[in-house]
Each structure stands twice: as C-alpha cells, then as structure tokens.
Length: 130
Image (cartoon, rainbow, N blue to C red; front, side):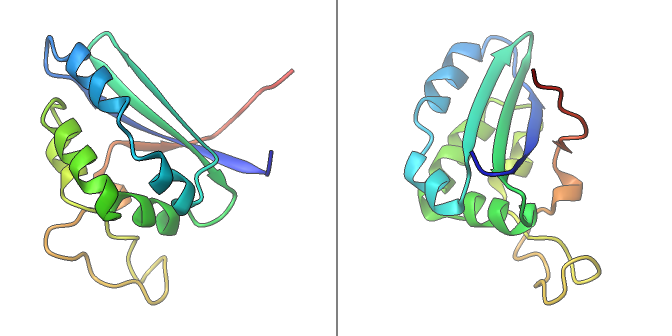
C-alpha cells in the first residue's frame, strides 16, 4: 500500500439512531472514494458515537476531502448521515479546502461551506504496527 495518512471524523449520535446510521454507512458511494484518491474508509458506530476514518495518500488532505465531500454522489449520503448526528449539520454544508493563509489560491468558503477547522476532525499523530 502507498504511504498514507489517516484522518477521523468523530460525531455524537442521536440516541437510538445506531441502526439507521449503520444502514446509511453501508451506502457510501465507493466510486467517489476512489475518485477522491482515498485508500481506505472505515466506519465505527457505538456508545453514542460515529467515527469515519479515511486513509489517503500522503498528499494534501484538504484537496482530497474537498473532492470527496463536494462530489454530487456524496451529497445525499452526507445529508442522510447528518440527520442522525448531533453535530451533523456541519457535514451536510459542504467543504471549503482551507483558506489562502495555508493554501495559496484557496477560494473563500462557498455559501456556508465549512473548513476543516470547523469539523470534528483529527489527523493521525502516531501509529504503531508490528
């Protein structure tokens, strides 16, 4: 496998929505994951949380996440998922890849889109493998 970095999106679930969230996660548009350059996509649901883990090539996360989240094939998926997440409205608003301070040439956030700083995202900080 190519060198990759892992990122997670962590959101709290509305109580009792675990089954619905699992069914929605089974419908992720896999072709959009491929087109965005993702290497892996893993989901976790339990104890009131939903975690989406993305493994992408060691490139610019902002560009790849933008390519995925703003893909028309993904919009309905994130809209459905967001209805079951306490912080879900953020995910459903679209994504803006950074700002010009950190990403030269970046456009201002389009009509309510969020940046990575506004999402419950974490980047891989340490990995131990055997």
